[in-house]
Picture 1 (cartoon, rainbow, N blue to C red):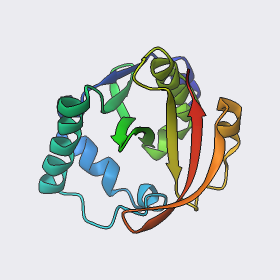
Picture 2: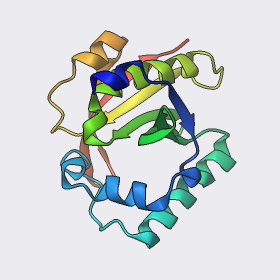
Picture 3: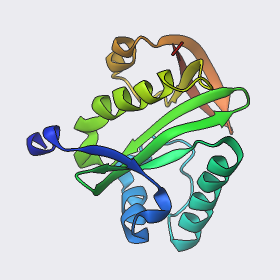
Length: 161
């Protein structure tokens, strides 16, 4: 992982990533431990539905989730999705690339700060996330516990204006 600390992090489209890479990533049981809404098996149909939903966000809102690349290699996905009037930021990295999380989040937050549509960003974190210092260092503040699609989350908010 030390070698990737200097890698070039870029954002692409999920539809451009080989399907088997995303399926393998999302089928890793270690990823599912922190994703309470991941209650199904990832297969080709799940991937097609997932990418279609993310592309619909891009069509509807002009922004959505990206494929995250490190020197051109897929390391995960994340980005902004509009939930009502709020822009929620999510990040799902392959376990071996967790060390890039803070760097990717800073790059995405810089994007949000430069976008007039995004006055603030929310983060919905599963209660299983116990290391929350990075959110505080970003300037996010705890809003409270919320329920989303039948699961409990810790909600944080970061003003970007």
